[in-house]
Image (tube, rainbow, N blue to C red; front, top):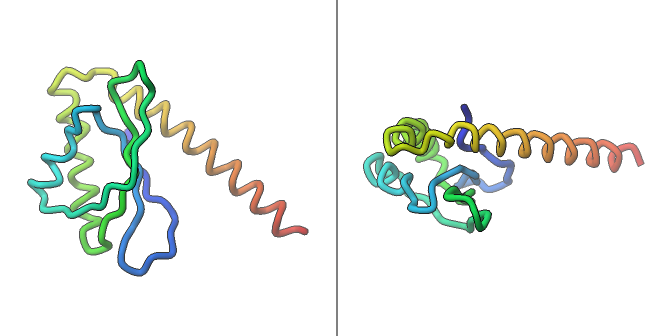
Amino acid sequence: MKNYWRMRDFSICSVPYVYVDHSSYQADQLFVQNKVRMKFKGEYAKAESPYCIVFCKVRKKDAEQFEEALEKLKNKMLLLGYRDYPDVCKEIAEMMEEGMKAREKSEAVCDNR
């Protein structure tokens, strides 16, 4: 189960990420424990969902610890009783893949012109 995605960017110092969290921000404590510094960029949440998609940037040297913290988030969510978290992440992963495929297709069309 994938609960985060590393996005493309041209920054030398940081890496943009998108991850799935609970609206009570369960990942924040894990970031503190793993000593990860991240810059919050925004979030998206459906009105009826307890989950949100968080956009952030992480320093390149902290990227490994960031990903380790998000691996721990999977277990934390299940332990807290959010049994649908894997399903939500899977659904979002499918949407992300569709979006990336569509973007690659449109880039290929632009390159052929």
